[in-house]
Image (cartoon, rainbow over all chains, first blue to last red):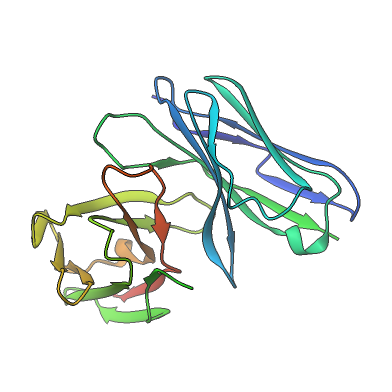
Length: 114
Length: 113
């Protein structure tokens, strides 16, 4: 079975450019999570969806960040405009088994903003 | 304010010995805890979990202990193997609440041959 798929794996962009990160959750999972990992803050939740609906976006740092989940098999995290402090590894995770809190993570996208 | 704390950034042990990774939490609403393992350039993978109705859960070489009164949990790996070298994250959530997991910052375990 395919796990969570993220693309691209690496992204290098210049400050001010738009960045779009993509995620395909595990088929059948109904919750999707976007995390950001930095040395300073560790692994922090940005936003999560349940049945394609955003449930909690309190972790989104500012209006430059937006996320969508147009259907059960695809989600995007967009940063516009990007800034050097957005450099981090961004993970997508999904979960779906009732009563289970296990989340399955993708391999991450390493974003570098110069 | 960190609700889940892993105070040891790193730990080094000899192959075959026990590895003990610690985690403290401050939110008394947390009642379900998970450990994840992360290799470089990969996403975290689920390892073992424990509900607050238990004080111990075991899976092969991995055992998690929960001390609710101290708001402390630990992961024991016995015997440790070089392949266990990774970053270990502790996570917590409140059952019946949202699905959000709150993660610690991780402990890097190195198992020396």
